[in-house]
Length: 260
Image (tube, rainbow, N blue to C red; front, side):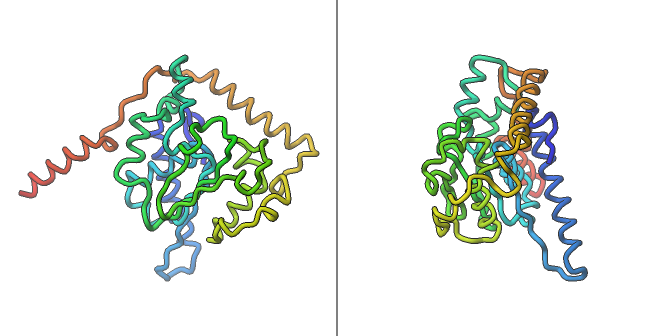
């Protein structure tokens, strides 16, 4: 899914794209199943960094999509923000989405309000102890019964080269953990030998210049977009009414008065 403004704009708007995509894919998957049968095909979501946290915002504020999602897998998701956003935004003007990923930002507080997870959905966070973007490291973790938090280095301690990007882009252990999660296999039962037997996920060969050029191009493109982005702000934009607790409570009071 391509988010508007490459994910650097207002995440409240970007979340609507997530919701639309979930509804669309779920409808398509249901149609492709045996027609005439009411069994629903629930979908799986895989996201990296912000892409692992933003679907949670969608699930929090659009209740109808919760029955459509089976499993959310995140690589280094900014579930509770990152202190790196605080440090950058204290020094410079930041893209809107970066201000919204600060520790204790209004967006992050709204994301984790009411419930962090929903019992019908499985959550897996695949993490790296050498993540240089999401700090502190436990900011990605969610400590609830239906959540698995697993660090690649707990299985492969010497993978110091697997950082924020590598965990979800090229590492074989990250790939294997994802496949097992999608197949509803326990990640705690994966052996270190199996996870560490290869360096790179299928389809990637570090001996070719193609892999290195793609990683380099991706980093360069993202850096260029950050430098050229004209939506920089010093402060986080205000939460819109549907996402504010005071607004939700006010709506409930009004609804109660009307019913009376």
